[in-house]
Length: 470
Ligand SMILES: Cc1cc2nc3c(=O)[nH]c(=O)nc-3n(C[C@H](O)[C@H](O)[C@H](O)COP(=O)(O)OP(=O)(O)OC[C@H]3O[C@@H](n4cnc5c(N)ncnc54)[C@H](O)[C@@H]3O)c2cc1C
Image (cartoon, rainbow, N blue to C red; front, side):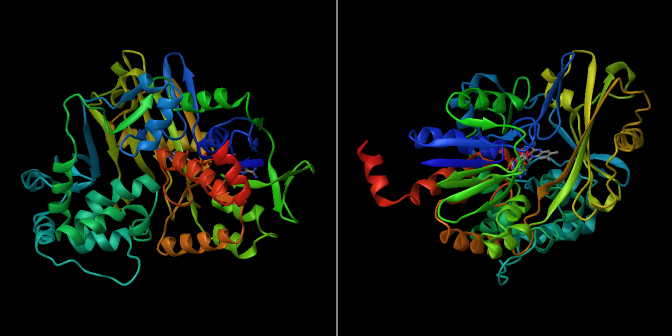
């Protein structure tokens, strides 16, 4: 079998990795348009600093990231977030306010801590309490994250507390994001326990709390690029891996014809598309027009990260936590700020501070600057306004991510069903990547693994027999 994997981000690399394990006889080719592997994962190591351009950590509670790291021999190199300075703040009326203690699954569960918080007014706190009394509601079909949380906890708690945490993950607009596609467990809590807070508390009790257990977020010592490097190393001898090889289109006269931008055509029995959904749609335009149209309808938001390094002594106050998030209603152009050298102390030498500012969110694409000087200026302005930092950073690094964050908006679950139905008509074709069922790294890894399973399922029966008896 000739298998073509298109897209060398974490999803495509994972697909190639699981394919060579599960279909050892397959001839696998991995095609990547860029001059490097990893897609959104990119790490710079510079004078003792570890600078992440895209993601900086992954969720350990979703098993697929940890499982792959173990297979790659990276388990011992995974670090959790700093357990000694766990504060996270929310910008509220231009001042940083601590997130209340006792958030479980991002839902406040500690009444005392909510009562003390300045993030929500007394009226808003009383409204949050209604969560314990309001009966579950059964809207027809999908519901937006904003509507759902506002319905349970009130609009104020949503805007000041929940929106910046949840929508921030997607750089999204909570009033557009589909609850069912982003945080489906919240709806389950409502239905099962009649209250988000009660449900989140019950779930927390069920979670194992072994002392010294790992942090919920993990990352390798010198950055997430370690995962990419290990994957590439393990694939090099088994997979035909081609950088600088953009694919232009896919047609299917009998087997698949994968036409490259340089005019060459490669034939394949099976194809895994691990490119962003709008690229996959473009590639399939002539072969599967309605599938292509659905893929191209998934919106993506653009975002940028600006990393700045300072001497600790130049900061007016110590960075005593992981950073802060900025609610949409604050009207700032930044989305969040991570205090990297506190969150992951091994990422900066002693005596130095590494800070990362996120810019850009859904609905503000046109307003997001793309050029380095403006982005650095914007980040410095944010740090001055909120933290009083006026010193010159001695390192600055900017990464602009155009159309990078898929938006699982209202209607996304129905769209996924249509995609699945359309793919049934195209045996040997599978999708992987962040555009569909999870944006985080573990989800993307899992999507690569599932795509390989789908290819295996669609093989002719005789082949499956011979595989089983081999
Ligand atoms: C700033 C930022 C911060 C993030 N933070 C986190 C985080 O902390 N934790 C977390 O879990 N997730 C985070 N994410 C999300 C996560 O990084 C991404 O969802 C994930 O890396 C996407 O992987 P992917 O393989 O699906 O897509 P990509 O990484 O986009 O890979 C797709 C690949 O396809 C290639 N390609 C495109 N067109 C073609 C073509 N025509 N032919 C061949 N190849 C092509 C691209 O060059 C790219 O390499 C973050 C994302 C961003 C942008």
